[in-house]
Amino acid sequence: MTLQITHRPEAGRIEATVDNSLCYIDYRQEGKVMHVLHTIVPDAVGGRGIAGELTEYAIDLARKNGWKINPVCTYTVAYFKRHPEYADMKAA
Picture: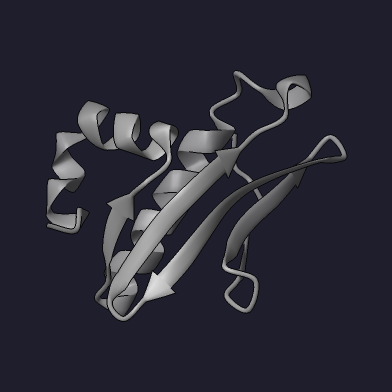
């Protein structure tokens, strides 16, 4: 699935709408660290890889801006464990 993902830095949000359901990552920016707080995908559209695509977008965004990611939400913590290739993006 390829999502139409929008970054809304003023809201600290990365989002996509799928079948009229808003899916998003909430984050807080602190200097060069993006604290990923919540990853939300409603049950109605779950199981399609949406959270993974949103997370990959966040990682790409962080990489392009020279940021690191502090995975606060449980989904992002698990994502980093499943994808050790992104270990360089994790804040110490």
